[in-house]
Image 1: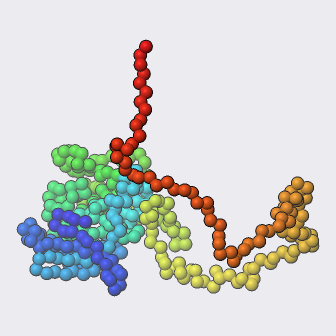
Image 2: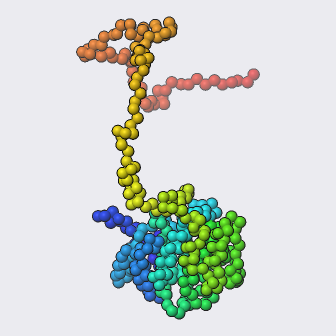
Length: 371
């Protein structure tokens, strides 16, 4: 892919056959836009975070003109997943599985003293069936005083960032609430592109948005707790991860994982080690000598039966038809005859492809004379 300041390519190691994604950034446009500190902060933060729901930065190479960031290769993105469903609405069981993993990744970022500040579907990729948070261009380190940088995307921007009131980790919780609303409905709650800027700011300031009728009560309560106007009254990530809506769609036990029947094939990553361990238990092995089913001995009536190949036809009409081909004499084949039969020779009359006009026979023309 290609963006405003970077392009992404796929690389394959010829020795190990491992495929990675490389993000190439040209330094000159970054220096012109004064984005060099932002890019170096992104490299520092993403390279220091190791979590299964955060896209891993494998290596960074720099020369005089470019940055080369080697990262995990993602199969698709959250936007591609939303487009697979009618009206971009993901069912609640699937949305809970997806949203819970993204919230776990954001919680790990906050524990590492980092704020993302630009959470949206475009910045969440899918590596197999696991969502990964990417694009740390607007990330910032947590400080004692709140940040006041105007950054992010308007549809997902927290009101404290939009109105310049100073923001912290609660801004990511607001963005997660907008993301969850969009996953369940197919559109953002405040719909900035379809309304003017003044109406959008009023809706965000009052935190007014409709709840669709197909929302469950638990989903409405979770979205309501995350989209609270005062940041200090907003739910934090531990409260979000303990919510009843996520527990309702989570596996009840390790033996019976929650399976979501979806065409997108996005589900919990199977635990291969536990599956292999359970398959190697001695009580699951079968003894063929004990479990073999004995064969039934043949009955005397079955032995007295005449095989089908030697049965005589019972029909008087069918019997001569079967016997006649066997009684007909066979024609001997002379394999040593060197003179095979030749087809009759036909006389070929040569015809010239071209004849002068003078040598052609005159044609007879019939003219109808009126009486």
